[in-house]
Image (cartoon, rainbow, N blue to C red; front, side):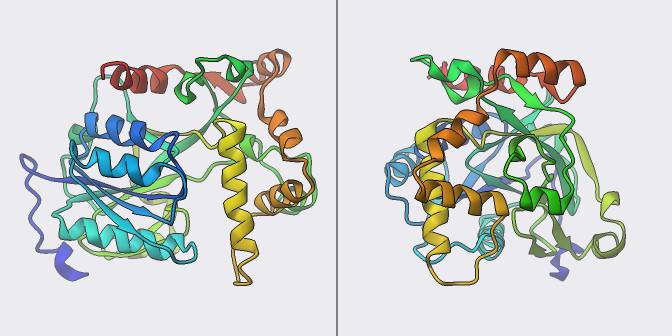
Length: 308
């Protein structure tokens, strides 16, 4: 871990490597890789956790265009362990910065910026705000794409923890969203759970006492697309069901446990309908500043995808 202190950072020749943990993400993984490559990511380390859809085939095809290392992992889902493993694999590939990503997240810089010119310095850990993108009635249109979503949560609803665990009317999509981290693999000690925190030899004091002092980038926003279609949502919950039925001790949020129960009861599609914003809901959320219209990610993603 002490290599941080003698690792030389060359701002004219540094490497950004993105790590991604995937399982059945064939509706979004290609767009994710293409967009981030266009924004300055040099290479990708992708761990596939035993996908049964076309994810593996897409990754192998993209290897002909991009520098992608694919690691196949059939074990029981262990995000914190695997993301740390991927970060150290990225280090072996010469990473100066590692973006710890999920397939449904897009790290979009502000206008007229790229990830490269934002990260052209030696650091340890950077956090970036993450916002949920929301679906509306456009999801029923035949040509709908996930990046057509242009409403995002700006000021989340803060639910009391006990209320959130015991009330089925809680909208997790409108709740607080934890930030994500970019790490320097030289000196990295650990990555927490969902890539929300990282302990680094250069930020140990702040990590344990003043995590809010960890550098936060005002120039990068993580746009999160957790709900993209009913088919995708159902696949996600089926994966969660398998984890819960593994008879292992699994840490999983109460909302996922409830969705697994609804899947078992045949009520998951009813739950999905609640995610679709109605016109009156949009108007109310806009008035209260809970939701804003944001077409920046749509423009950035569409520019890359439509150029193919």
